[in-house]
Image 1 (spheres, rainbow, N blue to C red):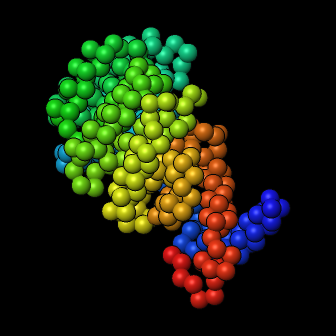
Image 2 (image 1 turned 180 degrees about the vertical axis):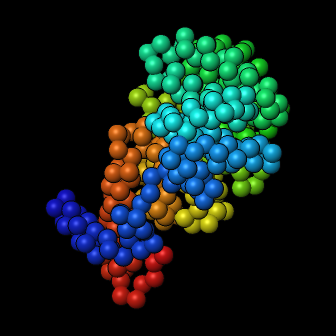
Image 3 (image 1 turned 90 degrees about the horizontal axis):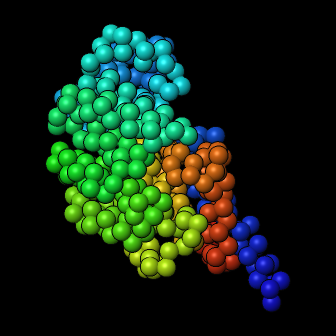
Length: 337
């Protein structure tokens, strides 16, 4: 019987694998961490050693209170500055007190400290720089997100973390980046537990506005549970599925191949694969389009894009293996999207 099952499974894969690729971009069209239409030209200019487009873009996000975009751009500019310093050095010489420069400088310093064996000591030294960034634009929540990251790496006690958290939500109650940073602090990998992390994520998702990325926080907590070296006993499968369901619902509110929710969709796909919810994972891969993101794959492998390519093939195989041999997308005239 096992031989027969294997034969049928293989026959299903052969019949359905090709049609299941509909709606998926070819492998050579996939992009890793593709910048949006505003960030891309600023990065190109930075590559030429010019800082002005980056400075203008961040100034616009500050003046328009685009805190989510501001946070994303700061992260990307800091990453770029770590690899290509000419444009950033020029910016520092020209405008050392620019609030946008101070923000990127803070993020860069925290990232470098996290990569050092002397992490805690270096992070404590970064605190005055973060404070300067916060003072330069008092209404900006992004310095407080950076401060939360700094506190986590420096081993700040719970009381200090809660004070920073209060400052962050006072400026932007639904800021996604601040919530992600707090979620990490409360995770079992740092100073909390799977249960505390999950409860925090679920509360934030319940309070979130429609379409907010905060509704994906529970699935982020689910990923922490599913990839933990020690499976948590206090998080039942139903709770993990509920987190995934909420993120699936959120994903469907955005257009397909939209770069804005790309990271959340990649995260959700990873969780769905861990839960072996193959058809749901295939749906997310179609919605992702060409926009692969480093997170969460870089937590699992060294080459996120190669892994993403292989994962798409695996998901198609698993879906094909359970479709009826004489039906499904491989049947003549069948419709598949």
